[in-house]
Length: 262
Length: 233
Image (cartoon, rainbow over all chains, first blue to last red; front, side, top):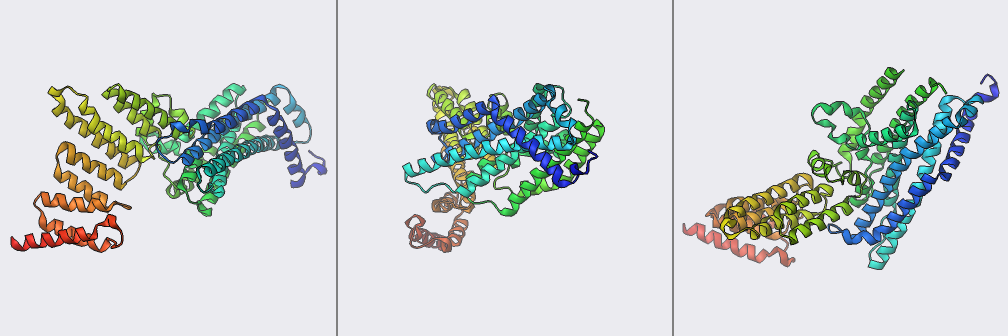
């Protein structure tokens, strides 16, 4: 890293982009990604068949709710499992050592890994979101109803993507300490569950949990059900909240990885 | 190193907490994972699905199971499955209203004749508690108040409570016009004619003349009739 050609923000960004692109390529070719993607798409499509289970509300609302539920659930699984699997595959296959033997800083490596996984999560969310939009538009046309508000659906998908990237960041933090992918993905999912139950932390002796991110805020289905576009200020605040936690988890993960023996 | 990381996480979390609270307060719908809902779902295996966002489908499955229990005339299973249904998805009024009707009107009919009378009261209380839970979880709604009023009126015979619930229904947003009229009729049945007359006079300006559901002429006629009765006293 003493070579001046390797210094500076532009060089750092280039290295980060290279690692991210490599991670994205690896993630796209993972069987797990394909499996979760196909299962998610299948379930979103199956929502049409499952609408017989809908008793409480309008059919389009049920389809939107179910589709976004699948997107959120599989997105979280994909975030935790892919992040852990890719991180430890590099460590066990010595690919991380080879990368770090080059003029790459450890934080760049960690940030690149995260960006790659965030990329695959964006592709996953966009694909399933498009499928859901098509499904809703098709069914609305069949029923003679106005098509769903695409801005709302886009906002809901964006919120779910933010949530899954936050889960990926939590798992990355665990990865920087953990000894195996299984442990890291398991703990990552447990931390996700804790973050979902975070609104209950006001009661009793669980108050200290309030420092943990509140994933219940990233409720895409409620956004769609509210039926009116959310304010830009709220969306911006939520993005800032998610980004701040991603930055916090990423910084701590990079710090821990810096001191990790490879 | 671990201590430093934990301290950084804690400090970061504390700094971000006000923003989280602010966003929670501004959210389109409150993040409603109430402890009660969690308790209800914890043993059912549905918690993970509900957290993952598949609430409507999960609630639909529980509702179907509740219907099956209803067909078998099993009061305990029906009541338990209704609780699971609303715990999975508390948003549709359909579950709250029809669940309360099952509890208040169907469950007592399955009891042996000898104990039916006393069990009717117990089941009515159960239905009222279910609707009160609906008011807390789903949020206030005129339909929930009207259903409570109907149970008070038809099952427990508590006219005072029925009148109170109809008043609350009439005061809720998007309330049906008839809630205010029935409140006045119940006040009249309780012998509180002055109160009924005042109530209807307050309601009259809010009733549109061109909406038949508002029954403006009927309300006006009732006010006149009450005024005559009060003058005669």
